[in-house]
Image 1 (tube, one colour):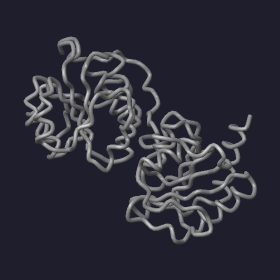
Image 2 (cartoon, one colour):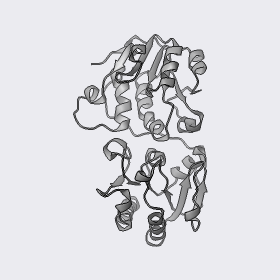
Image 3 (tube, rainbow, N blue to C red):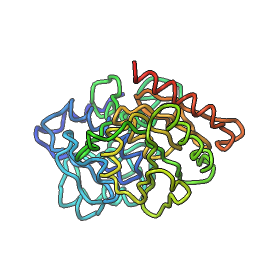
Length: 308
């Protein structure tokens, strides 16, 4: 099954891993990077990522360089091995421009002729028939090229600084998502925040990314349009995270924060929080039908577990 590419890559070679976006995918790429670094610590390892998601990899000791998501940057890096984890037309152009001796990509990618190392489906690499989590899917690329098969570790993020030590214990709530089918009603979040504050003794802090408003959550502390560095610092000290299926949930999991994840149209088996204590809530009638009481019970169980 394995191509044993790593056995043929010379010591100190340059490797470019292409993971252009999005936030959740970037966070869930970090276990694959850790596996590669552990197997070949001599390699000069770079990640190729869009600027807006680059903070996902800041201060990560498994990386030597963060490259901008341009064809010229990859070409100038002159990698010996490119591992394309993205698969779109832009990443294909980067793979071609790299002129790397080994060009790895999943066999279902477009422009498959570009790749002389074609990675099969994760189930085949892992020897399983079940659905695989995105973290496992990305890690399977590393196993295929020669990283020894092992348990896929937790994602890793590194904050520039944590919250002030004097700050009271708090819960981070992320009420936004990419589409309505993945968004729990704002009114539910408001009610949940009030009860978390009163019954669990945690201060609610709402977060949202650039271009998103938190006007409906004004009674509580809000970080509206916060950059990823600030979000990382906040999440690193949180006692609890509650949010829709989106990037910040994966960020919280990477810090080992307990997570209550509200799922609508996406599959928790593929996109659920990875390797942290969590409860995933769903409803056959859609995400809006998940009751506040169920979410509060999940928060209480996780918070009680942390207090023990």
